[in-house]
Length: 322
Ligand SMILES: NC(=O)c1ccc[n+]([C@@H]2O[C@H](COP(=O)([O-])OP(=O)(O)OC[C@H]3O[C@@H](n4cnc5c(N)ncnc54)[C@H](OP(=O)(O)O)[C@@H]3O)[C@@H](O)[C@H]2O)c1
Image 1 (spheres, rainbow, N blue to C red):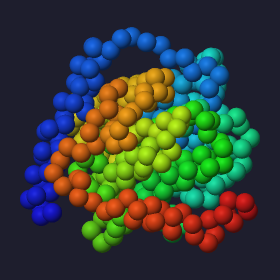
Image 2: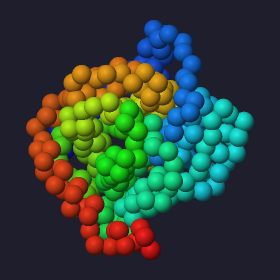
Image 3: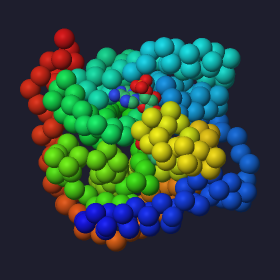
Image 4: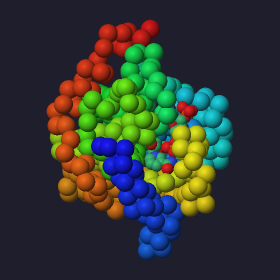
């Protein structure tokens, strides 16, 4: 797309979605919902990206409603603080400090941690980063791609194959409205010459939406796979990655509880989504396409083949068992 084309698309995106994605949309829709309390007693959850923002709130509310939650993120201190705050809740928080940009860590999470716990009832793949400067992991992968897409995919599929998700588990992927701007593009998933953090992030989130539909098509059964958008939420991640957006829209942004709401609602209600496609937002399934051009992307097979090669390189497994 041209520079002007990009600008027009960005303007259309922000103006078009602003009322809906901000707290304005949340408050309007919430006024129509019935008040309810969650009950997740005796459930086992894993929430990635649980040390901050939306993931922290999901983990905290799940524990408050009785769940035993494996809380995964890099910051051991922040996770310990969350666990301490959760001490008097009905459920519990178990801090698991790990770097989920690394395939080796994901392998370790599965092989060392998950195998020692009861099968998960709920897996929330919430971890996500928008990196304005491209970065590469110690395993040689684009850090955003590895964190946002590859490792959540490996965690979900491996946990499923190894019987570490209960037969009626719910898997919830945290996507973003940014994905409306782009089609599925495999070459755009990792850093390239014209890297733009927000665009790279959008491509990861589009791919995540397509993978969720694929899981729904192929894993049809009692397990439920959902992908959701939390709205525009005031979190440390947004403040750091999108400082101008955060400064201008701060008064209108949702709080973490509003961002977490749909994930908790999905886990509680487990709606039987008929069509594999679509994205959940404010407790309703919505189209995953809203802007021109987003349907004309690469084939899903190309994405699956790419993930297969990038998740399977020499050294990843050795590092996990070192
Ligand atoms: N906020 C929004 O407006 C918004 C909108 C659309 C979608 N989302 C999505 O919502 C999710 C949560 O976003 P947020 O705004 O709550 O972000 P946040 O405040 O930055 O939280 C991100 C979480 O991910 C963890 N994390 C980052 N890199 C990691 C890694 N390599 N390994 C393990 N954990 C890692 C962070 O903890 P450590 O630093 O301790 O690792 C933190 O707990 C993301 O997927 C994001 O894309 C957010």
